[in-house]
Figure (cartoon, rainbow, N blue to C red):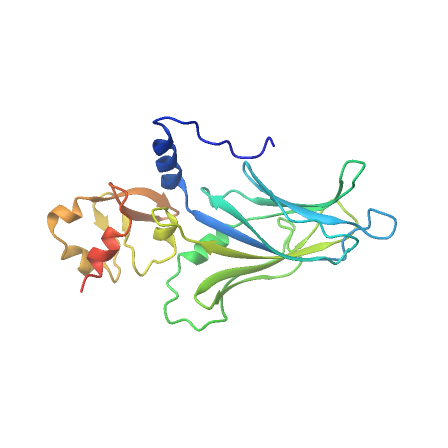
Length: 252
C-alpha cells in the first residue's frame, strides 16, 4: 500500500533514523472508535461500514461491520504524533465486494486542546473531573460539546463528530495518550516532574527550581532546552537519557 510506512533500509543508517524519530516524536495518540449513529444507507436497506483514520502520512482503518447503520466498533487505532497542530481526518466507507467502496461522510478534528490538557498538573484531582471543554462551531465537526476528563489517572477526550458531505450520520470516539520513554511525551504529561524553562539559562519558577539548584554543576551542564511547545521550554539530556534528570531531582 502506498500509505504504509516504508521499512528502514539495512545498514548503518537505521540507528540514526530511529534516533531522529524519537527526537521528533511527542508520543502516541490512541483513538478509540466507539460507534456510528444513524449512518447513511448505501446498499438496498443498510450499509457495511468501516472507518479510515488519517493523520499526515499515517492511515489506519477499522474492521467492516456488515449490514448495520448503527455499528459498534470499540476498536483502538494508534497514531504517532510529531506535530500537535496537525488535524486528524476520519472517513466512513461502505464496503462493496464487486465495486469501489462508497463514501459515507467524513469529519476532521484538532488535538491541540487535548495536548494542552496533557501538560496540566492534575496530581490529587478527583477522577471524573472535567479539565477542559471544546465547543461545537462552524469551524469544527463537533456534534456537541466535547469534554476532556481526568479519568483514573489518564486524560481522555470524548468526541461526537457530525459527518460532512453526507445526508446523515455521527461517529463517537475517545482520545487517550500513550507516553513513550525517550520521546517528548515524557516531558509533556508530567509537568510536576519536569522543569519548565524559558531562554537558554533561566528557569521559570516551579516546585522543581530548588531541586535543580542543588544538582552538581557537572550534572546541570548535561541539560539544555533543545525544543519548545507554545510558551514552554523543557530540559532534555543531550545523551538522550530522558529518565536521568527525573532521578536526580527526586533522589532521596
